[in-house]
Image (cartoon, rainbow, N blue to C red):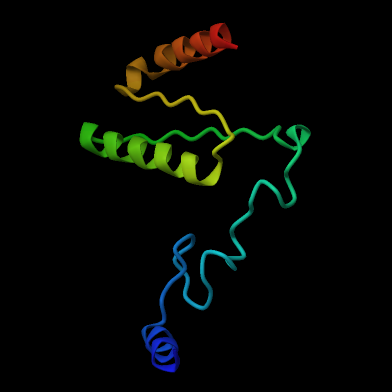
Length: 105
């Protein structure tokens, strides 16, 4: 056990959640879990809107994949609508996604 502990201390492993060394994902100060401060449905009244531009299609694909994966890890109970496309078409795509989202509710 002592050799294993020394190995980890010598390597200064980084936290899997935030990437900072000195703690792990279970003790990460950045991590909030649903059963801590924000457990009730009334606390889930926040939204996030992000727009990236000046991207190539492969960059947009990779960012979208990463956003979907991050949403699943960070906010599994949250709902998400993701839209990608040429800049000039984006307003119409967003409007269409919002319309479809309202029909589903």
